[in-house]
Length: 214
Image (tube, rainbow, N blue to C red; front, side):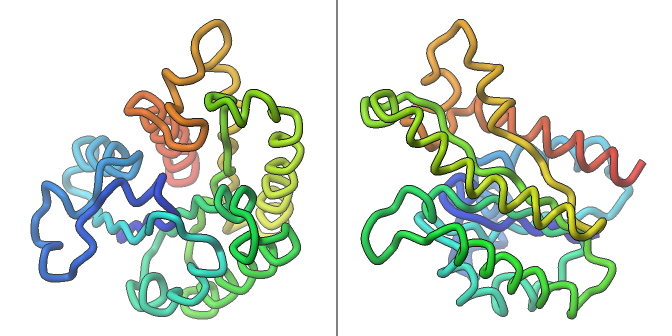
């Protein structure tokens, strides 16, 4: 079973991107939640033939991801597609900002192509999230929650349309974890998780994986 992780910097994890360096199994998956998931599942199911691939790219949006979808998704032929993207779509400004309507269209386009290529594909569509760590997010927390909530609703709506798509909620997970402690323990700059934050994501991912296959 081949599992493909796709997304932006939260998924990228400073992985080795160059094809000639991907033989280095210490670094090819990066150091994001994808690393934790790969390690935990690989150790638990050593005879399952699991293969883990990371093609997340820092600063990406659904627009950029759509442009590289053939090379970095379809041609890889995954059995499971994990997709975490939307934070940059929401918070980038100017020409790089992507409204929820385009975000939804881009996601549906990519998923439609993927299901045409593999009708048996399973998709984990993960909720974009943030915590009010930086001054900007603290002073504009309500605005940020409303804005990002529209992108979350898109993911939920898409998942509800197809039983091959599994929505993984993350905002409530981080909100709950942050109760009574500094948000920066989980997300150091409001957007990018710490090691502990990535572990929270990995825990939810593995929970969804086991629920789907066991």
